[in-house]
Image (cartoon, rainbow, N blue to C red):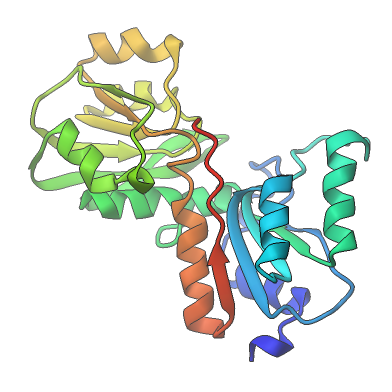
Length: 257
């Protein structure tokens, strides 16, 4: 089956379970096919967080015909095809690799999304939407069956065996609830304080919310933008392998941020 998969068929497959059209008014990234191939069948898909030359080169080395990423090349404004952008696009065209990007729909997805997967690692129950961003809640919050310390929460998530960027134990020693919004969502810490959540997990910390967390007695884990956003692409990769029988591989290119 995988030998017959064109980019058009893969696009239809992804759109069948990722809410790409539903985020059209709230996501300024160009979700979907960003660079197409010449119509050739895709026999292998590489999955990565970022659309950058290092992931492109590894995708070629691994024999992929498509690269599926969370952070694509286009973010809602016209760009001159020059410099790094020109080199990246030319490389994809020269090697006939299509680029597929999914941003907020991959953060928000209740099963395959970054935040849902992290919530699953934490073992959260009674899960409900959390984290308002451009009019949509893209994260999740829930409760623990048994109280969890901040250090235990760090171990549960794992962060690809990398240390989190920052851990701020400003609240209860034993957490009974947590909220998760991956990436650059430090501002949602204020929402966590308002909701009375014990622990907030995100990617990046921020000077502007430090004292809000401290005074609001909120524990916060800043796992790193990259390390909190590997989960969605990996979950979609596994879904593709199971449903399509296609060869697929995750490309790990951490930024340390």
